[in-house]
Image (cartoon, rainbow, N blue to C red):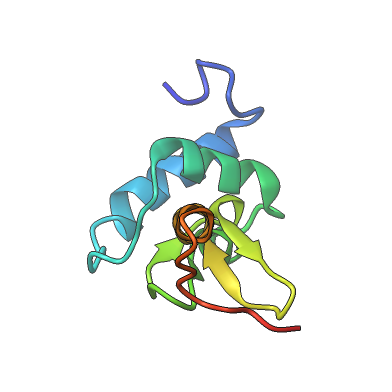
Length: 105
């Protein structure tokens, strides 16, 4: 179905999406926040091997310790990896004049 919808250009990449859904999501310990779109994006952006795709998908936010795909992790000025949710929440807190953290250069 993934290949038929035109989201991937080869059967090998479509099979890798299915393999990750079947094998790696079964081992989920509650920290993974992947969606099907995230897995397709990871397979599309990685070299093509299973290991690099999992590395792309398992970027840890250094504040909430959840695993996010690379597309949902931001590297800030002090080289912290922060999830998009935390960046948005921190921005909201700063607008209300209650910053959660101060990130120094």
